[in-house]
Image (tube, rainbow, N blue to C red; front, side, top):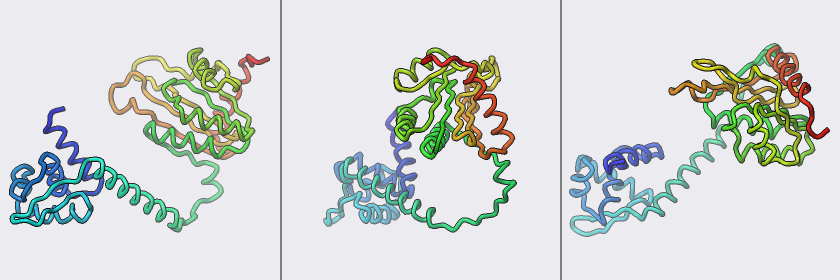
Length: 271
């Protein structure tokens, strides 16, 4: 990246962390100077000189800029480590405050029994899907069945979550679509029963066909199915998922039968 690109991206990130554009631009200008006057900051940042003073006052109040009370006044940015620590703390404080407000928000219950039976929800993005996968594993009460079709979904957090579930004495079935996947699962979780599934329909063909990435069945009533377009080079390549719950949910019933039949048809290597 060029210096201009680095500066531009840094300014954008500072704005995402709560600074206004002029504040971010002044702060980046001072990071390029040992110290500087308002005139020098204006010339380097492009911020109107009359607005530099306002921006500096905000940065000073946030502990990001120090002021030398000379004539003219001279300013300097705090060191990078101190600045990032303060921004990180500010960001974490905002998240904690938001979490508190969200937890204390009254939720109106408008769902009916039929809604609960038929609900199916969707998710987009690997991070969101992995977070929901981990949540479902963590909240499982009796049984977990996980079929892995796309090896790239396996992560240290998934392995840790499954190990924690095993420590809670839950029944756990792990299936891999290929021998390579089962070997990876066996290497990370040597004390688990791991199957190579007989569900050929999990794999896709080529072109625009959609492929299954993962199937998670928890307590035989909550189901998550991930999918992606393996040959796509655009946004469609991003993993997507649907999840549903309820013993009488038609989607859950159908996939539960397919998943459990696929596992049952596979010989347990431990026997």
